[in-house]
Length: 88
Image 1 (cartoon, rainbow, N blue to C red):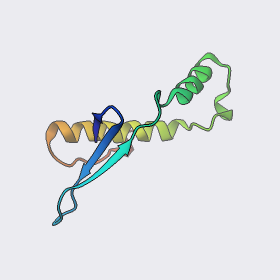
Image 2: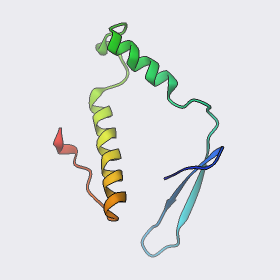
Image 3: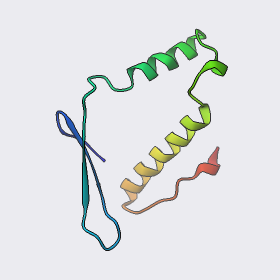
Image 4: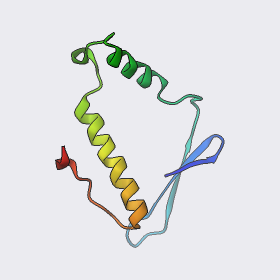
């Protein structure tokens, strides 16, 4: 994932074994990404919304963070790594 290839574009580059590099341009049209999600989490933390009424599941958030952590580790180590879902 290449962030801010231009002011309005992110880019994903990937390879399939035996094939050439593929590139997908992702147009950024939202000036403030994830604002509503952050506002929702703030309301949860403040107790304005009960967790049982939230569409955001804690386990899904943990899984997302594990994927991001594995991506960062893969980038740093320059190799494919396994997402360790069993850590939590």
